[in-house]
Every structure is written in structure tokens, then in C-alpha cells.
Image: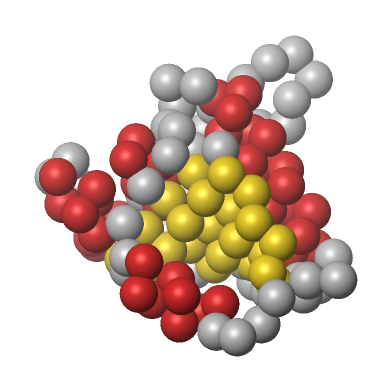
Length: 121
């Protein structure tokens, strides 16, 4: 069984249900004790800014801000594509806890030689 988990997310709040599912998967992995990395690209880069992930996708869906808080509390980390981040003119000073800018090389360094479960949304 793979120990680490990587969740790749390209979608932002234009599809809050997809974002919610990605966060539910990431929270489940992190809360079960797996080292978990969310790789945020394209519009998902915005989700790494404080005050952005606040939507409720559907009736009965948990609020995104509560999922982010649970993920951070479970030591989940965010790796945010710097090209995507800079292309959108986002402010590095607004990055949330456990988020840093980094591309594919830091992602592969994080994975290392360990087995990893991957999910892409």
C-alpha cells in the first residue's frame, strides 16, 4: 500500500464541487496519517490564498474553509505552481499555512522513491 498521497487540482471556484471532492480526498489521506501533498495548478492556485476557499459547493457539502482547516491541522501541505501563481498576479504574502510555491521538481523531490497514491481533479 502506498504511504504518501498526491492530489493534483487544476480547478478553482469555477467548479466548487470538483474542488470539494479533491479536498475530501486530501483530508481523508492526511487525517489517516498519510503524508499528503496537494499540487495546485491553473485556477486552483488561487485556493492557496487566505480568504479564497470559502464556498459551499452543494446542499450537504462541507464548507471549503472547514476542509482547508482540517487539511492543514492534519499536516497536509500545498505546493502551488509558481508559473500559474505569477501568471495570475497573485500575492505571495497571502499564502495560507502549509502552502509554498514550487513546481514539478519540488513535487518529485517530495515524492522521492516512496510509493505514492495519486489523484487528479
